Length: 272
View 1 (spheres, rainbow, N blue to C red):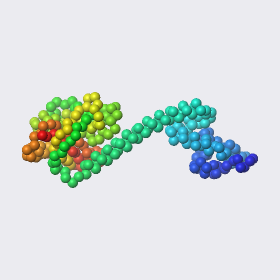
View 2: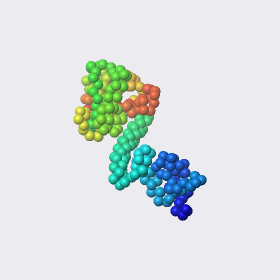
View 3: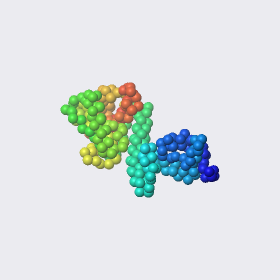
View 4: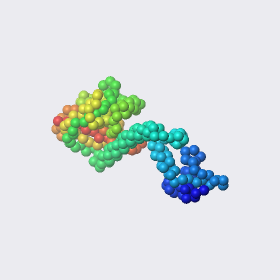
């Protein structure tokens, strides 16, 4: 035996940056066997097997199972390798898109959550808002009918599914629209649930640019609805004319707390 051409399991593991246990496992699985096994059971590897180990790592990192790798390593060729690599490229690109989408969602939720942690809850300010596109879910309710929590969950689930189908990556904050007619008649029920999107899509709604009376309310949804007459009265006391819907944004809800009294909503009421 030309010892200089062979490496012990420990030496080969060190060369590959792995452990002896991993090499033993790959041997048992039949995907990387030592070039020589002596009569006393000692395994010996050749240095060029490093490239086989490296290929196994590439295929494993790309999502191939050990069974798939074993099938390839038993009789691999260039055409077979290209087929596998093309398939894994598509898989990794899809994973990359999913990760990018999740990362964008997490960053957006973080931004929204920070915006809810203020010390001026209930104060009304006047703001200029740019136009927003809204991917909206219409609530099939008769005028003035209150929506139950079961119906809310059903419509939210339907809205989330529509967002997913439309490829919308940041559905939060989820919002609701109270139409002008409802506000004028003291009815505080929503006509739509929505998520803000970055461009026009079929069946989108538009939140128009303009002046809005804005306040952030901490408390349960029911508490917010009970306080709406007070907020609207305060807006009118300033001599402001309410000429459009109220847009409700859920900044903190089930995502941050199980206690409804810790919910935070931002409300923007269209004014002249």
